[in-house]
Length: 185
Image 1 (cartoon, helix red, strand yellow):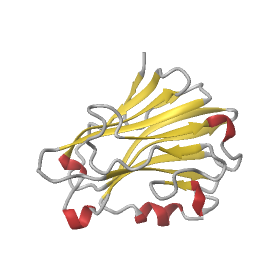
Image 2 (cartoon, rainbow, N blue to C red; image 1 turned 90 degrees about the vertical axis):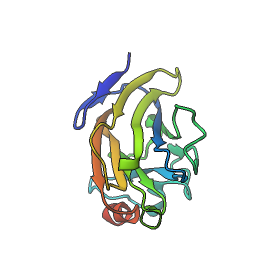
Image 3 (tube, rainbow, N blue to C red; image 1 turned 180 degrees about the horizontal axis):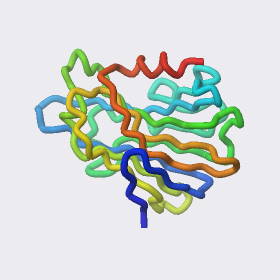
């Protein structure tokens, strides 16, 4: 049975290959929403060691091959209630310089389209054992994110030879480039 986490809570995940699934349902406004899942692979200084350690729709694999994106679902309509976008993480082969992997969802062209997470329902992040398909932990966003356009959903943190997942729910009224600047090496 999966562990349901609240903001700020954590769970040891004890697996080698993780599937990080992110899902959401845009409100029925008649407009398409293009939400994008990304991962920032951070070193001990809380920065990416090189640009390639930022995995997103234009860079779908980290340089060590340990983090891979499923690509861009431009409408959120491909999942039918499941994960809209996902990333796989080979936890055994993550570059030794990487101490955290932060998972982010942003709304593409949020300012131009006047879209925000207050118009999105049922948003979540979940960690599954990719080898067995078993869900390990889930964090359902239940706070009010009205006006927010960028969310750090959660992160994997290296704990010696194992990893822990922490539910974050950090929201911003910013575009993705805000976090790109924050985490740039």
